[in-house]
Image (cartoon, rainbow, N blue to C red):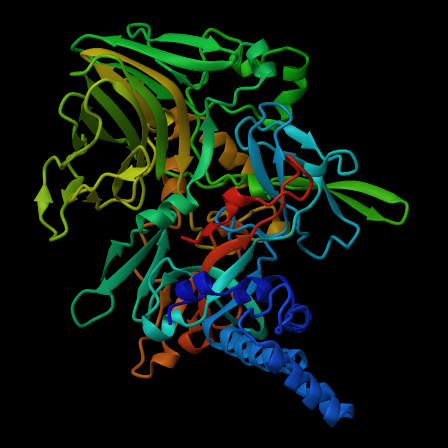
Length: 638
């Protein structure tokens, strides 16, 4: 029987999840005792009075302990307890089991001990880890402050006064222990398994390496490699692509125009979405701090583009004094910086207490790797049908465009880099892939356009648009580019319109998960840095597009890339129990997974417990009532 059928037909799984087996049995026994089998509330109306009299007479005649065990209610209770024990053992042993996530190694997909709070400036809700790490902290350490992923405002924790500033337990999940007996594991499943170096410890990670894989982690992506010829000196590589559901689960918000704080507006902080050119005019109107962009274009399209103009942590003192930082106060705005693998979940300051000593210990996410796999979300209102909606994503200087004819709904993909080739499911080259969308005529549409794993992905109103040749091939590892003629990766996202009118009411920037290929040591200050460069030098380089083509910068961006051999070799045995898998955490810099274990780097099939299925009890909410169930976070795990 499938576990979903059991979940629909039984309350046992939930009770087993939230309480121990003994508590459940006590609950069942107590419930059974309350039943009245011979009439009354809950009893059977078809039993005759004569039968009731005979039962009472026989029981009185036996007396003592026999009378006790002959009582129908007692016997039913004992039978229920025995059946409950058997069912609990079978269900928990073979079908499903409940687990709780202790740490943030799978954030943002799954939460460990964490805080779910609202930015004190822009009111964006985000999550940050609350579990302590490293030997420098003891049980008295607590999170003193966190940083918003959008505006970098530091919110100080006031746990005694603000309920949201208190730590929440990790997600409680249900794991299907039977599924891998019926079907093999699939790449990018979220799996639970025994730690190969400590059999008493359960881990949860995402499955990225399969038996028989020669695996490579490069530029944040997962590749498989094949040897060329009989020798193993030359290898070819192929990127692996996450299923669309898994991709949506790992995407992280970089910016959202619905969340622009009042202090940034007070100092006239420039909109991150702008034309950036004097010859292009797009009407920007702000209502209660939320911008809306109005396009009225002829044949030549009007475009706005995104610059990652994020306040720096040390600039907030000036901003709170209603002063614009010097780098933004001149005639020329900064040219834009790279989007990196910043994790708000890892960005916090701890208050360390030891006796009378009180000191603040920062544990910050620096974002040391450029992320080229990005996307945008837009709420667009097409005013006049027949125009052309244009979406543009840049990676390594290549513009990946999606043009949607708002009259016919036809979407066309293209790339201006001749080295990029779109391929269909059979591996055939397609010049300009097309697909049919629901954007037909005037109306409001929610659009998501993402470039990830060398594939372009398009959703309209949360429905995936099937594009046969959305995947593409690219020989060289991309590195960021910029020029005075084309801002390239300094303005990596764009949206525009031609031949009509359109209003964009919301824009959000997303990024894909970035898998680092080295161990992330939290106390080393490097956080998974793949080069010998210091974090300060890396951050400065990310903010200086005019330096990206310098030889030293090019060498930095190519470091730890263009590998000629696999990093991990996983065995595929005839005995399936010994097959080897490589797991990695979504929170890559802070995940102790197969990349960094001191012992075996793999998990054998016999160590697999099962596949994570469902978050059945996330942390509770404080609104509208304390401990209110968090229904929107109860979901299937992708």
